[in-house]
Length: 293
Image (cartoon, rainbow, N blue to C red; front, side):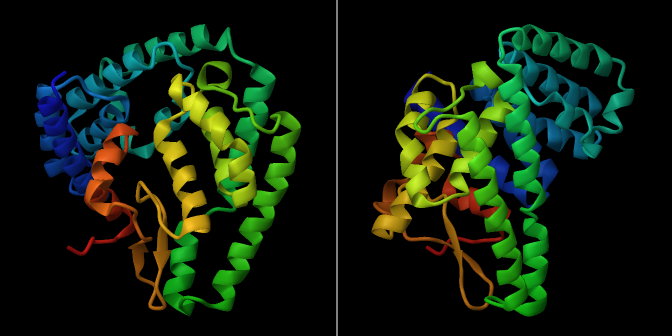
């Protein structure tokens, strides 16, 4: 793949994700299709393209992208249930090839499962549920809209969330030795993500304890570099007041979100592309933020 084609792919894909974040599915899908003609699709792009096609009731296209997504993940245990249960695919389930594609994914999961540490996988996925059930950001946004920022109701909810994060960490440390990370091939994608989430949602000291292990895991494809970038940024913001990848956001006194200060901001998208993050100006749309020139 030439650097030119990669750059063109990245530009189209980033813009497509931006449209997806603003629920402009037609525009997003057209850009995904354009990008996929230029270069081999990446996993994160195929699944989002499938969501777009499903929103547009283009069932043939949805099936095509899901099949390609599962094929790219054929050696990895994926969270298939979250896809099957997603309401966006309700109409797609009546497609003649739905069962064939899902059955193929299930067979792939069964093959991958044979090499997994099932007890650890299950324990980590249970922690995922605990992490997410007290992390209702839609509720936080609603509290901010009603009571303002900062306010006692918002602070009370965040305090509850932080308390759960600390409890999760205690359990996590019983499962995973400090300085190690269970990789995707050991526990599957969802449980590996859970390990990162537990670390990310705790103190800078905890993040630093696991950072080198996260980097090493990402280097061999056992964790996602895009997640590790978030940990690097969180540590840097705490210690230096700047970040490299633009993954960390703040909120002003009026409740408006903003990207926390960047180091070498002119090259931020070059760094983001290397770790699998879409261009910052398009990614921030999911938070309702527009970057200022």
